[in-house]
Length: 137
Image (cartoon, rainbow, N blue to C red):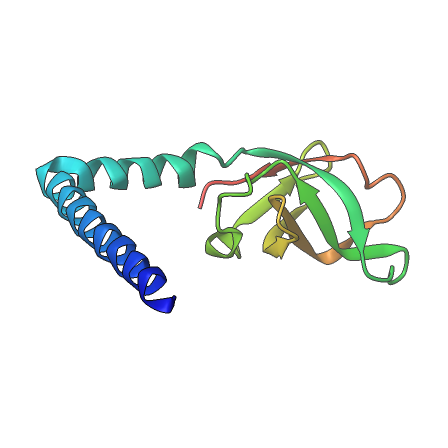
């Protein structure tokens, strides 16, 4: 009773192995025929095409010290596909407020939001909803 089942599994395994080998050979052939350059171009588009220069403060993080928050959560700079850790330290400017600047501190969740830290803190009152500008690296 067990032998026919075992044979079927072996046949499926052999068939899928040969298909995988054929697919792998085709994939390698495509990569050597210029597919690799296309993949690099696509990766480049993903990392640069999904970064916006404008974002918005959606919440404040941590306790306020003297009425100011040092870390805020910003949405709109990055899409979920972008590795935000690659942009840590990038400068951010609060639009319309005497050029207050901060920097990207890291990712927040998985939806493309990020933490932005302000050295002197940001006044808690009216901060949510303010626009930020991501400065060039």
